[in-house]
Each structure stands twice: as C-alpha cells, then as structure tokens.
Image 1 (cartoon, rainbow, N blue to C red):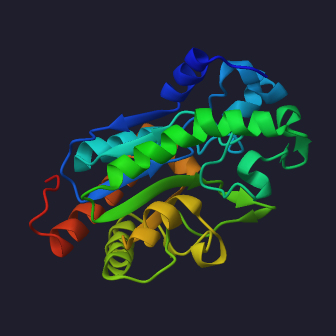
Image 2 (cartoon, rainbow, N blue to C red):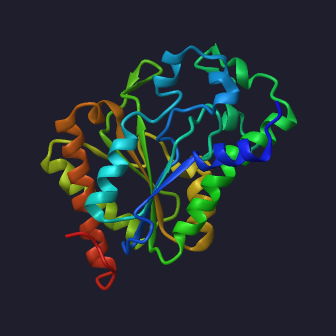
Length: 261
C-alpha cells in the first residue's frame, strides 16, 4: 500500500477528536477504543461491516459515555475514531492484539501477515495522532481516566461487576475513587469492582503506563458493562454515578482546581 503525504495527513487528522481541550478540570479523559472506523485504504480489513459493530472492534457505548462525562465534568477528553482492530493504541507494539489477527477464532484478513510498510503506515495514521493528543492533553492535569466497556459474559462466564475501577499503583486518588464510586454504585444497586473484571496489575495497559504512571500521575481505567450503556436511562445512570464520584474526589483532593458543579 502506498499513500501520498496529503492522504496520510488527512487520515491522521481523522484519527482523534479532542473535546474541551482548554477546560481547567484536574482530569484528562481518554477513550482509546471509542471508535470503530477503519481508514478507507484498508477496506475494513477484509471484514463484513457487522463485525465492526461488535465488542471486538469497539468498546460499545464508550463514545457516548465519554462525551457526557466530558460535558458534565467540564473535562478535556481524547477520543479515538479508529477501531482497535486497525490498531490498538492501548497495547504495546510487540503484543499480538496490537493488530489482532482474529475475532475469537474468526480471522481478520487484513491483519494476517502485515508488512513492515503496512504497520508503519498504521502507526503514522492511527497511533501517532493519538499519542500526540494525549501528550498535549496531560499538561497541567492531576489524574488520568481511561474509559472502556466490557462484555457481560466472557468464555461462558458471567462477570459479577457492573463497573470496574482498574489500578496498578495505589494512591490517594485510587483509594478515593474506589470508595466514592462503590458508595454511589451501591446506592444505585450496581456492583463496583476493585481491579475487576480485569486486574491492571496483571497486564501492561500502555496508555496509562506511558502517559500517567511514568510521569507520576495517578491513573485508572474505568470499565463499564456494555449492556448498561445501550439504553439511554442506564447510560444516564452510569454517567451520573461516575460524574458525581469523580467530582467529589476532585473537590476533596484538589480543592483549588476548577471542576464541574
């Protein structure tokens, strides 16, 4: 595949959207898996369109949730447009699912035997713009929050949490978010997990390692059960729980920093 500089620049410009970049919130919100687009030259990676609407291609409901939280918290957010099947920004380049070759056993034709040139172009089009947007957005922030969703059932086993708070290094921020979100979740009849349904201590988590922990910024991955984000009432309920929790934590830890009320 060959792209001229203008084509490459146009595709890179479409890779990421920055919401409220000048907002003074202590938080930077990040949604690496919010989009399901594949840049046109890659022809949907050889997949039929319906596959791009599955959780393999996108974190369902995360785009809407991130936009609500950005508005309600008046917090900047970095929202990725391209599917994690095209390139998964949150996975190190050496991991198999950086450009995963299958969907639970179904091959992804465009990700089989990718050439060095193809991988270079994907990083130029999909990885570099997101890397720069996050790096730019970190300045002046107190904590990073990466927003994801998960399937209710995995491998035939039902997950027993509704919202997960994932952390790698303990901090006053992590403790406060866990305590506050669990309290708000319990009042709404939702279970908030501590490093569930995934344990960040057992995984890499490129985004927040690179832009958060390595810079000394406390960081969490938020995981929300994706069926809670498909109905407007449930989406609003989850958004308000997270908004209230993050607002309370910010006002406690950084009272002089501007937050939404």
